[in-house]
Structures are given as C-alpha cells and as structure tokens.
Image (cartoon, rainbow, N blue to C red):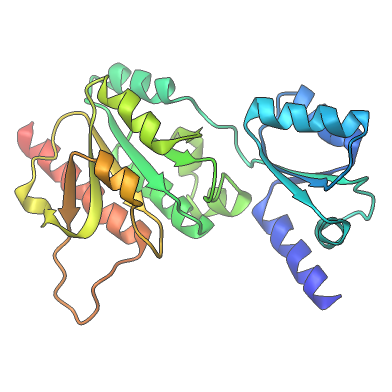
Length: 259
C-alpha cells in the first residue's frame, strides 16, 4: 500500500492531468488535448477500448498494454475501467514554428535536440537554457524520453511559456529533413573534437544525449560534427543539462563574435 501511494504521488507531480475511464479518455482525445501515454488493459477488445487505441495511434500517443494489477497500481480514483491516460502539461509545437520564429527574428535557426533525456529536471533545465541562449526551440523524441510534465514546466522557471518544444517519432529522420533546410548538427561527446576548434556559427542543431548512455550511435552518425568539452578534473562526465548549457553558450559566443 505504501508503494502504491508513493507511485501515485509521483504521477500527480509529473503529470498535469491523469485521466481515468473510457469516456473521459475518449473525450480528452476529441477535445484536442495532448495525450502523452495511454495504459490499456491487455486483452480488452470492446468497442470503446478499440476506439481509444485507434485515437492513440492516430495522435502518436505511447500505448502500453498492461495487466490489471498495473492499472490498479496507477489509478487515483479506483475507477479506471481498464484505461488510464497521461495528459501533457503543455501542448507541443511544430518544428516549422521554430523555423518561423528564427525568420521573424532575422536569425539563423538554432535548435536543441535531445536524444533520450529521461529526467524531467534535466529537460526543464535545458529548456530554460535554450530560452536564455536564444535557441528557437527544443526537439524531443516520443519514445524513451520524458515529455512535458508539470515538473519540467516548474524546473524551466517559466521558459516553457516562451520556448517551443516539438515531439517527433524519429530523431534521425527529423535531422535528415532539417539538413535539407540547411541546418547542420553537432553533438556532445567526450571523444569529440575540442568545441573551441569547431565553427559553430550558421543554422545549427545541438544534440544532447541520454544522461547515462550519451548520444545513440545512429544519431551520432547523423551529426556533422562531434564536440568535446574540456575537462580538467578527476571525473570525465557532465550532467546532460550542464553539457548542453556549455555547448549552447559556445554557440552563442561564436555567433556574437561573428556579429
């Protein structure tokens, strides 16, 4: 009982709204609300549940088919009817919104792409840095990454109100599409070339990897440059949000120098 209470508290903190019950989840989809995740009782095939599954797939929500015990563990009302959904704290933007913002400012696009950031505090801190550094938006993947939760919004210290965040199905495909628009990519990696020796001006996408594993192989291979951060201490790794901040401000420094 103590474990269930602890997990329910975590979900209340992490998500603006936990939606339970078939009609409530269906209405949330129909209203246009952004739904991050849907948990459905495994094996349930009645009409309303099939409709919810179809809506989740259409809107790109993550679908999780689980046992009743898992739903009972997640429920806050005890009346989940085999369906629980998590709504995003904020609506997501489109990448085109970010490019338009850069155009309105008369600036080269500066985007920050996150490859599997799982800690909401890290995501919130990166969004805050993105805003202060003048980035035009943040791009996150749909899977294996935290979404726009209430904790993210709080940690961003208000930056989420001003910095667009887009959610994409495939980060590598998104990078390929953006390359066609003239944007090149640099990722952070301890084995990369010293960041001071790279030309980080122009339309750029900065890629920050997962807290534990860093940038994934396919994403790294899709980057034009790999940037290393000088480290003088006894340990050789940085928190993801700190690494992102250091590289973001090297981009700012170089842009100011060019101006």
